[in-house]
Image (cartoon, rainbow, N blue to C red):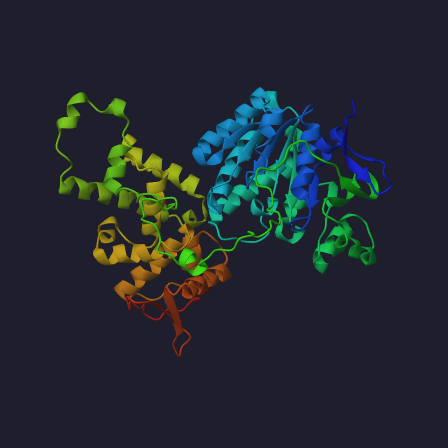
Length: 499
C-alpha cells in the first residue's frame, strides 16, 4: 500500500506529496538556516503521518510537545529521568507502539547528548519481535551528531554520535527511519548525513552551504544562488520519496503550533515612564522575592560515605546499625586496597585506550576478588578514583589541603581533562620531569600526540598552566598561582623510545 503525505504545493500549484513507504526505507535530511521553516516542515510531516506510522521526536527546545494534545503523543521530560530510565522507555515505546516526544528543554548540552543517546539506544536495541516501522525525527541534528569536537565531554559526544550513526546507518532493518534537520551540512557528521536519500533544502546564504546543497540535488553550481532567494517555508526537494528531479515546494499549514513561537513585533507602550531612571536602576528586591536561578547540585559526598551508602539495605543485619563507624586504620586499609586495584588496572599499557565502561567492569571483578563485594564504589566514584590514579595521586595524598586546592582548580576543566591537570600538578609538586606527549595522550585515552599538545594549549588558555621551553628544547610546565613547576622534560622522549 502506498501512502501519500501531502506536504504542501509546488510552484505550479499542484499538490506536493511524499511517499511514506519510500521514506521509511530511504530516510530524509532537511537543511536550512535559522528561520527558514525547518521545524514547521517537520511538524507538517509529523501531523500528516501520525495516523499511519509510530513516531519518536528528539526535541531539544520543547517545540513539539503540543503534538500530545492533538495526536496523543507521550511527552517524556528528560530532565526528570535517568539515562537508564530513558533507555527502558525507548524499548517499551517500541514494544507498545506508542508515539513519543523526548523533551530535552532545560538540560545543558552534556546531558542533552547523554539522554538522547540513551533513548535512541533503547529504540535501536528493542527485541526483533518489536521492529515495527517507526519515524524518528531529530531536530537540530548538528547538536547530536557534530562534525567536530564541541564543548562537551568526549564521552558524551561519542555516545550521541554513535546513537545517531546507528539510527541512520543501521536503523532501516530495525524499522527505524531517520528524519534529521540541521542548520548547516558542514556542522553535521558526514557519516550521518550521507545515509539520507531524500533532501529538502531551505534558505541558506553561505557559499559553501549553497554549493553542497546544489551538489546533493544534482543542480549546476550557477543554480546554487537560488537557495539564497527561497522564502520562509519554501524548500527544494529531491529523492525517491519526493521527486526524481529538483522540485520547488511550499510547506502547507499545520494544525498545531509550537509552544515557543518566535516573538512578534509589539508596539511600544503609548505612555512612557515618568522617571525611567528611578524604575530601571532601583535597588533590587530582597533575595526572598527575587526569581532565583536553579540551585547548584550539592557536592558529591566523600568516598567513605559513598562506599557505605552503596551497600544494599537487605544485606545489613539489624544490629549493625549500633556498630561503631570504621576506625581510621580500617579506612586507611580500604584506601590502600582501592589504590592497589587501580594500580593493577593501569599496569596494562592498553588500559588508557579502553572505554570507562570496560575499565569499570574490570574494577568490579577485582573488587570482588579483594573481598569488597557490594561495597565497591559506583561508577561516578570510580571515575574520580581513576582520574587520581592516572595522575599518580593516592587517596591519602588527595586529602592534603594543597591537593584539594588543585582539585578545585581542575574542576573548571571538562571531566576528561581533569586527570591530565592532576598529573601535571603531581609532577610539578614532586619536581619530576614534565610528562611527555605520549604519557599525556595515554592518560587522555587517545593515540594522537597532536591532541595531547592541544590539551596543554587549552589549559594555558584557561590560565591554569604556563608552558615554557628551555635551551635544549625540553618542556617546563608551571601551575599558575601555586608556582609549582615541573623539571624539564623532553616531550618526544617516550614516543621515540616506543618507536
